[in-house]
Image (tube, rainbow, N blue to C red; front, side, top):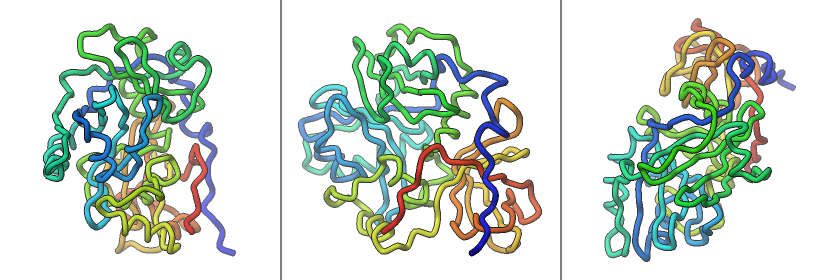
Length: 321
């Protein structure tokens, strides 16, 4: 049996002890696409990896928009703001090209897509700031309404519950201790959920970022662009890459290559998301060849580059079939 690389417990190298993950952070790096009209849900159902036709008012969806080859073009957290209006929260740097590409497929559907970023304020809630809105329950991807605000429960990070707050621009911000955006960005990495950004377009099928394990892919829904490739990757046992959490002393950047100590010529993975860790160093989510995690060492940028230490993911991975 091949020995696996040692995995460091999350608390040993990048804990939140130096700066508690607790409070309210503004999220200016995110944007909002509004999909309005009586066909909004059915249109998105036919374009994204998750089921939007059965989307209720008390739940949200993590979803990917893929090319015909199954490669992710964008990722979203989507929910119904009203019976005929769905909001898609995505990385702001991908909003314009994604809006343009999605709009090409509307055709005769009664759905209108617009950039609604200026119409809403977005905040991240962590720790104590989630208690009032969550009521003690933290069901991932649950959605609740608080007056004019919508709140989506996210995956936790560092043992702390987290949520996404979206409200009309000009409404009061949620109550809570101010939280630095840099700490929120770190919490996104520690949650294990990758938000696709420009350097990652066309780089991954959803399973390479563990989307099938965190509610981002529905294998029972109907056709969408790239669906055959995504399904084949899952059901033919051909998954060769997964997303892993790592810690490093040097700053990784999205799209940066990762090398294995046994092969200086070919990268074995890509950095998907990274942030400075409050206790020092940097944490990152890296999509790696599974075989590269079984022995040897992982390095950033080159075979002799800074070492990447594997950390434990905060959720279990579903096995391919």
